[in-house]
Amino acid sequence: MEMFKRTGKIAGTGAIVDVHVANGVIASVEPSAGTPEGEVPWISPGWIDLQVNGYAGFDFNAQPVETKDVLGVTERMNRYGVTSYLPTVITGSFERIKQAVGQIGRVCDEYESAAASIAGIHVEGPYLSGEDGPRGAHPREHIREPDYEEWRQLQKESGNRIKMITVAPEREGMADFVKRLAEEGIAVCIGHTAASPDQLDAAVEAGAVLSTHLGNGSHPVLARHPNYIWHQLGDDRLWASFIPDGHHLAPAVLKSMVRAKRDRFVFVTDCVALGGMPPGTYRSLVGGEVEVHANGRLSTAHNPNILAGSGVTMPECVANGIRLAGLSMKETIEAVTERPAQVLGRMDLGRLVPGAAADITLFRTDRDGNVAVVETIVKGKTAYVE
Ligand SMILES: [Zn+2]
Image 1 (cartoon, helix red, strand yellow):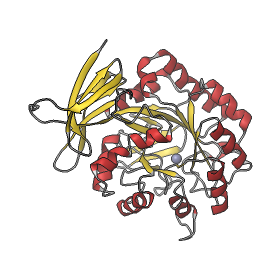
Image 2 (image 1 turned 90 degrees about the vertical axis):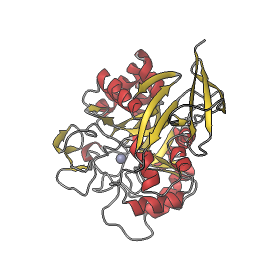
Image 3 (image 1 turned 180 degrees about the vertical axis):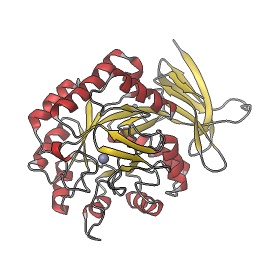
């Protein structure tokens, strides 16, 4: 039986605790015995990211997706404190999506590190709005109406690993499609949409649970109200995910939106393969030409107002929740731990309680509010240590 403990300050209360781990599971959390020496790191449930397209050149939308893409992103996520994430495959041809979800599934079957960190696959598309603005960087030629038979084939190919899908409610027959997937236990999300309030309501009533990167994937200019952003923001039945990188939502917008959603929001990075790359113009296999700006912003090269995913990391998201959105440490951590676990229906994740998976992130903060990961433990194994 493999046992160890970690000592840290609970992110939120600051209470110093010993977290005991046995066989990959949290055995107990107790007030720390004795006075620890030196700086005590913050201790938090492992961080969860519901939307990861790639990072540092590794890409879930590569053609084809290779083993190194899955392992490379997993390693980077662990380095940034993420213990569970959803590889995100965006709009493309049936063959491309099928290859990607199939490959991710096969790597999970073969490699323990991938299986330990990949909590499922997020398919963002292809049943989205085809309008410029709402469709963001999703290729227009592959956007289409919902097709349940296609969905079944993709789900089968993934080994039933698709746990989340983002759809546009205005697509033909979408309410029925949402209902069937919700009944299968899929977290159906609303995004890249120009839906009317009635269409949004129909999707929520059919079982949609979350607004994907609310405030993005929308028209650059919009009727001030009502519109599809306000309508989702005001619906307490819907969770919302936000990208707190300082670019996708201006700080005042992020702050206003988190306050409107209260405890019904999560943070995602929505990071892409070009995240972490030097400034310049890159040819992306999907999304065309993408420009990496000096400040880390990623946009389509032809229109700098259309964002093409983000280059933000989870420690920056945690820091920005406090710095930009005015959250407490407790709230910003909840937005990357127990809330995304709840969205996935995974009560074994996102909490430091006996019986939960031993997914633990230890980190420290500096005077400027920067967050740095000290150690990442995934299912009881150290996956990263600084
Ligand atoms: Zn998107």
